[in-house]
Image (cartoon, rainbow, N blue to C red):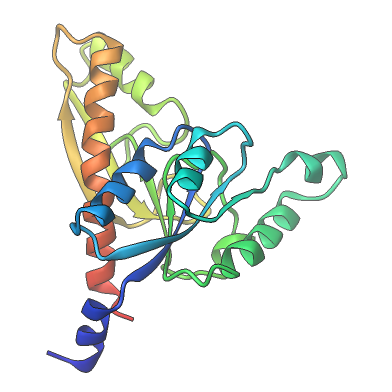
Amino acid sequence: MSHATLKWRKDNMRLVVMVSGSGSNLQAIMDAIATGTLQAEIVGVISNRKEAFALERAAKAGIPTLYFPLKPYKEGGKSREAYDSDLALKVAAFQPDLIVLAGWMHILSAAFLHHFPLRVINLHPALPGAFPGTDAIHRAYEAAQDRLIDESGCMVHYAIPEVDAGDVLAKAVVPIYPEDSLEAFEARIHKTEHILIVEAIKVWAGQHPR
């Protein structure tokens, strides 16, 4: 075993989690850390939405948070690249090993991503090549109602400027049953996501020992 591997296993990796909503996947990561399932530390939680419950989850756990909205940039006539570049500086200040997009509802441009090569991963509620972008769960459900598919799933992939198109770290298939309501299918997707996001972080850690 190399010295680098020993160091990796002794030191907790530093995570920044970026969120836009309730933060249930953030909670899954927090729970995995608390139980010792994941050897990591969340050093910052960042949201583009002030009302995101994820910020409250993090604050209650004593994790530093940052609210960084796009709206002032739009109103000030600044470009999306300017926002992404400034956001990258904010994230870099946390000195993360890995940045996890867990329900982050902005597409990050190269102005952000080039600061963190192979260090930004994204959770998406669909399988590779299927239903990129928003409303993936609803679109998969509708496709099942039309008998075009009988399964969907979720994946964690490297973030690249192209939407949901980066190399896949981990994926899981979720069946769609004929009797499913949208709510039942969505709940099963989210339950699977909570497991997959932790597993993907572990996969990343194995591929990128510090």
